[in-house]
Length: 88
Image (cartoon, rainbow, N blue to C red):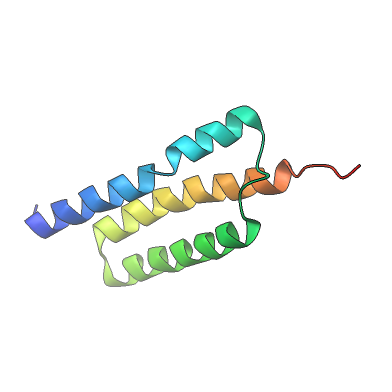
């Protein structure tokens, strides 16, 4: 494996797994009031397009890390939509 591929995988792994604490916290607390819906919709769309780009250029670090990031970010987005605070 080339050094650039290793570097790409390392960078992608760190940025991807930075979402894990938020996923866990949101799952446990069921609270998404401080999470921006617009930001996560836009972010998930951007990550999706990075994934498509990675597939088109056949770049393993881009494909793998954006696939996992999309799963994690989409789970936060799903919880944001599911756990909307009710208005009384």
